[in-house]
Length: 571
Ligand code: ARG
Image 1 (cartoon, rainbow, N blue to C red):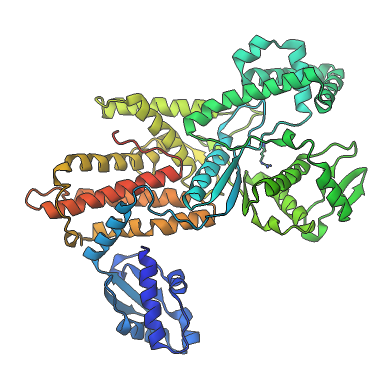
Image 2 (image 1 turned 90 degrees about the vertical axis):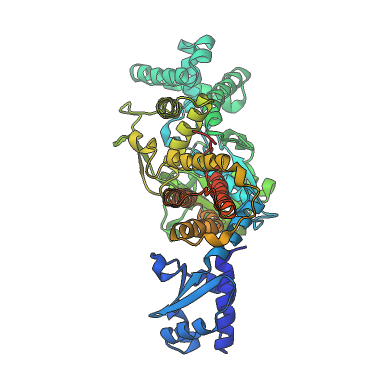
């Protein structure tokens, strides 16, 4: 039940009977249909300009001819304005169609099976060992998590991968520092922060005593050689990092199917490098082995350093082959900040040059930077905001607001968590992902305006209407009463939700869902303030408005779910 497609099919049929040389199908027309900015211009509009060449007829004439021919149960009337055919839907019927369709399959409106039998790998969050999770990691984590849900919702098999940053000489230095100045208790108690402190100390001391660098290198060599002591400390560092990070993942509700990170590919790079060599793609440059990419306006990709060491891209090459061979992906998405644009362009190009067609399924889903209260974050200047602190502060603030607004609420802690975390996540997924974001408390936690709490509050409002109108639930709904403009806005947003979800998936852009669900909440609130839902003398009309409310509640919940935000029933 896709209203837009239905209308488009009706128009396509009309076009077929008016114009002999017309071969438009419903989907062609659907792609052309626009939503007019003003309801006075109809619910949908078909610009006929593009058709005029093939149909050899002026746009106004096309619109007029189509207008005469069109007939459908869904359409109330059409108007021809300029070269546009404006379509006005039959309102009572629209309400019945859409509301019942949504309610038929709760939680599934907008889902599809277009991904059935296909697999998408999603590489997101991909944290670095012995570093703390700060707000710069929020976008990769939440965009990835949301995309996973959106692909799942469309029937894809998804594989969520946390490509751990667990390889590099810094880990040798860290072990060296640990052996010299650290203790088991200290790291166990201090967690990742204790490791960071050790690392900072290493650098300070190495300034004075450069021989420390050699010791650090020696420890890294031990990791490479699989020395048991080095390996034991290293994997313990990893464990501590993952345990610390898990607290944040638990708050966010984020999960992974695989934690195969950089070190996982230690023994999987040789065949890939060999293949590059066999295909004559590797050349020597100052002792290193590189692939020249001048023809594609890119600097060379260094695959092996002069000392034979592998690089970030070497591991990503191996990882791509591994994912392809293991999961047979149709798509492999990398949700990583735009600073790594070149890296991924090089990576995809290498696989293309190796002659593997599946590079076409790989995509870099980039995103902008996060600043905090107007200031760019900088580890060097000591201006860092840790994600766990941010989330806890959001929960605390949400708790204060709840205490003030709904002192009698039963599960305040639970709701404060849902609202606090929801506010942060919504804020992150509200703008086009490539835009930079400036996190501001007063904007994130506002209960009015385009915020998570606002949308959640609308959901809770719907729940409350439904609870109060329980007595009317048994009446036969009479949808013919739902004809006003405010309801029409709500209905159109419900009906277009599936299309938005589809587009969000095609463009890997969760913010489309965020904005749609926000518009739906705004439209419903407008409806709620202008109309009485419960009318004593009108049980059938009340039942219809109640069902409309139910449908809104359901779709808001689904939309929030798709962006990783929970929807409390009471706030
Ligand atoms: N750990 C990397 C970083 O923090 C991101 C890894 C992204 N994934 C990948 N396959 N390269 O920059």
